[in-house]
Image (cartoon, rainbow, N blue to C red; front, side):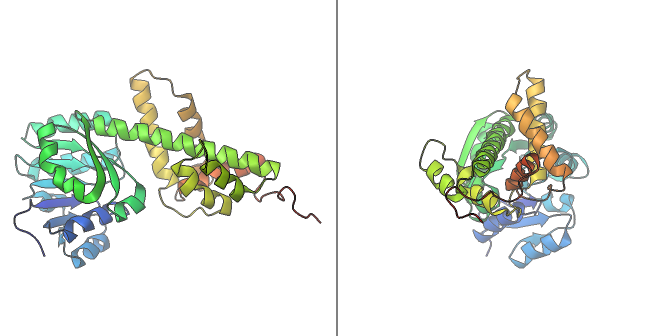
Length: 307
């Protein structure tokens, strides 16, 4: 049941992440108008209490706060500029883009929206589909501090760590730094497993040992078992990480910051995509090492009986 005392919301983008985030808002009592290019996604949320919209314009027409969760910069720009937020959202509203997109494009959109008296917050998230499902996302927010304080209660419904990190674009900057660390860490896990496999050690045991020391990481804990098992099922997809890494390198170029490790791991994501891994999860990066080493199956473990 909706609570009339809560702000009216719009939510645009009901993919793997967005549908869960919108669902949490509906569950706690917000009136949420939703839109997605997939009518099935809209219908599924409407069945759970959201209000279906047939366009972005309809979704945001009376929204006090509108949220977008979209694949990339062009999709967010379309939502803002093309018969959407800029032209139809009421003045004094707040538009929160929770996608991972270009910081520079975010700053340009924030200026355009401010001319219509609409505040823009960039609030990209970390935590993946599991974090979205459990309302346990880390949300890093750039934009006007007063707008952030107005929207903070809404953000807290979707995440358990919500932090204002600076001016417009700052949220995207912090998120891209997060992605840099994640990708290089995934690469390090791949290399350790590839070396251990080539040497014949028990990879499950090696992972357990590494988790008990300074090499421990979220990627080793969560993605390591899938790498070892050859499970490439999608969580956060190769295609999306490659998109984020290209944004990282774009930002690095604009700021004259050399990122040699990021450049290398980006080339490996390109290789993975070229071999049809784009829709697979990040752990499929290990298959690059399968191809480079020519070892698609593990060697016998040290001490194991050999025929």
